Length: 375
Image (cartoon, rainbow, N blue to C red):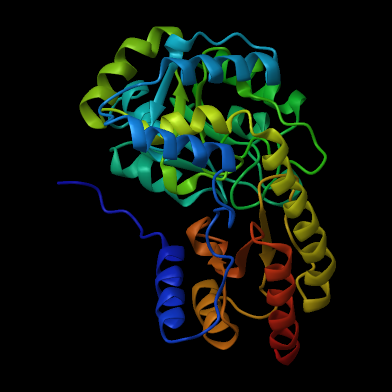
């Protein structure tokens, strides 16, 4: 029998938000980590060309794998053979591939708490054991080399994310190097979720490949490239894992969507348009960082990257799910409950996504200010 896992509670929030929208309510979606913008215009134009000229089928784009390989050289100074890159139906299958092909049932996988809800639940669903490392303000809500080193017995694997979900915090280069050193010394396999690379507001972002060339790297077109609905991602496997990863992806998922692969290749060179989105997020971030303390939300994780603010709401509630539902019903602003990301402390946190337009953020704040004021 399969493993029981917790639901993704933000989905229930979103479902209720859509119900309210169908009733005629104005809804502002800050519950999901997805851009409100569409794919780059050049990528959409390329998709139209392919639809008009190609019946398509099961296919893996060698040009796209070559372009991703070049991306690692240009962005991080590391050489990644295209043969190590698997194209996937988004980052979620890439995570499944990495876990399923790198570990054996019963293996222990370390994850940060708070952390992305699917890390814990995917690990459990695949019959591994999640080892949650509590990460608070003192370590900027991130796994540290010291915390990983302190685990006894050492886990077989660790999932890191920088920038992280739900906090947006970034692990600096020296700490990534230290984590890689601990992992090498103790035989811990690293999976690095780099889905939010490209979304930073100051601190530099580094790939774990700079410090551990044998790490598994998960990435996607959903966030920076603004192509969440196209379901396109990739996994970089270590050389010795390529054959197994290829066998797993062929049997479990076949191929990534052909149309998305054509569009994704073009999207990788739409940097001017995409960096324009990042500037919008930067402005939105500034607006929220200025406004939230005035609402009584002064304790927040430092959002160095991604497009989230993880805020402590303990002065108002110890039930983040109920709080988010009440906030949605009263204001039409949908947010994510912290219990998705932290089953222990998350009852006193909520997450705001600021991947909306700036006018929508301003509209949301106009609703939030009197609502929090009334509390």
